[in-house]
Length: 388
Image (cartoon, rainbow, N blue to C red):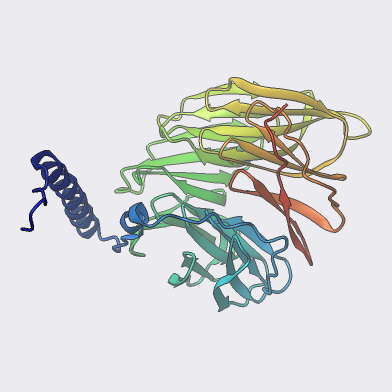
C-alpha cells in the first residue's frame, strides 16, 4: 500500500457487508417463494432499485389497430385494447408492446395488476396476457362465454352458458392456467363470477325468476354452495371484492355490502334516483345518480367500502363515462374530461379539449385519462396544481 493511503474504515466495510447480506437474503427469499408458488421469476423489481427510472410522458393519442367494437383497459404503465380483429398493448408513450390477431364478434376485456383477459361474449375462447406476451389461450366446449374476470394474483374465472340459456358454469384457473375448480349452477342465468383476493372464495352472480342472486363457494373444493345472497325483485348490475374479502354489489337502487356468510347491509340507497354510472377501485366506489325527470341533473358521490361518503357534488350536465383509480376520478361529460380527487374536489383543467367522438374514459395513473371513441383514443392530461 502506498504511503499516505489509508485502510478502509472498518465501520464502512461492515455497513457494506450488511447491505449485501440483506440484498442477498431478499433475492433468495423471493426466488424460493416464487418457485414454490409456481410463478415465473422476474428480477425487474430488484434491478430497478439500482437503475433510476425516467418518467415517460404519455402520448397525446394512442393509435390502436384492433378493428371495431374496441374495449380498453389500464395495465399499469400500459394500455390494452381488444377489438374485432385482435389484441394490442401500447406503453404509456404509445409504443407497441404486443399485437396478436384474435377474431371476435363482441370483444371484451378485464384487467388487474398488469395482466388482462380478453374474451368474445357469445364466443368460445379467451386469451390471458401481460404487457408483452400471451400467457394462455383457452377454448370452451359446447358452451358460450358470458363473462370473464381476473384478480390481482393472476387467477381468473370464465363464466359460460349452455345453448339452452339456463344454468351456467363458472370455471376457475390459477396463475399457471390450470383449471382448479368448476361449478355448475342448478338454475338461473349466470352473469359473472369473481374470485376473492386470497383465491379461496368464488362469488357467482346469476339471474333467477325471482331476481338476482350471488352464490358463494368457499374453499373451492365442493359443488354445493356455502351460502347465497338474494335480491328479490331487484337487479344486481355488478359486484366487486374488497381487499378484506367482503363483496360490494351495485343494484338498480342500492349499494350493498355482503360478507362471506351471505349477510348483507345496505350501504347507500337511491330509490328516488336513477343510476347513471359507477366505477369500482380497491375499497372505494363512485356513483352517478340522476334525478327523475327530464335533463341530466343529479349528483356524483364517492364512498368507501363501509358506505361512508368521501365526496358529493351536484352535477347538471350529461356524464357519459367515469373511471376511478388510485384515488383519482376522471369524469367524461359532453364538454370534456374533468378530474377529481377522492373527495370530489376538482383539479384544474389542462388546456382546451374536445369530447367529440368519444364515449368512454379510463384513468391512466393519476395524471392522465384516456378518452375513447370508435376511431380515436385521446390522452387528456390533468392540470397542474392541487384539487379545489
